[in-house]
Length: 163
Image (cartoon, rainbow, N blue to C red; front, side):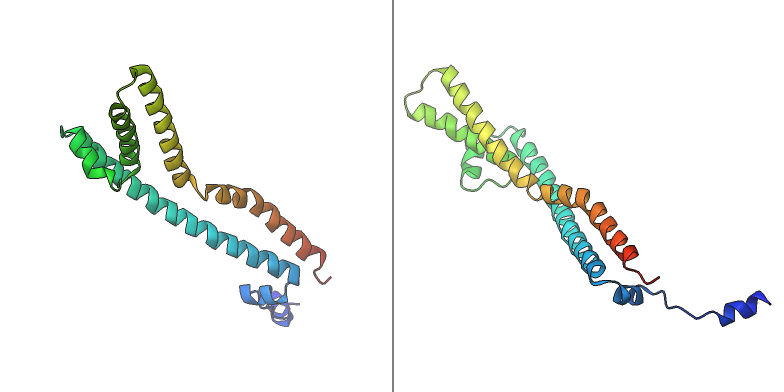
């Protein structure tokens, strides 16, 4: 028998993605749809974070340029006090506000002023860090769970495939 005749005699099986998807077990379909949804969610977070980090980097560079330009810190504080435009300016404004508050209240010791400014800086830096790191836990959770979910779908599909 000629191999070409055998190939023509074999039934043609449609192996397109859509055909395979529609013939899969319902559990496998749900796993695939869940993984596609998780992928879309992850990519939206990745794009959002990329744009956020790029914008934050530009704002930080702009603040540093203004900060080190030689302008008066008081003038810079007045300009930024209403609404800080970047993370670094928020830290600067918080420190300057605490410094000004200490001198308005009679100027206590330098040691306690230093401790209060350190505390204000820690809180402000923590707040800005949380803003930058939000939703990263979602990425790490999906990244570690997705291979196992995909493996589950694969095993389920193999177990329930027609023999």
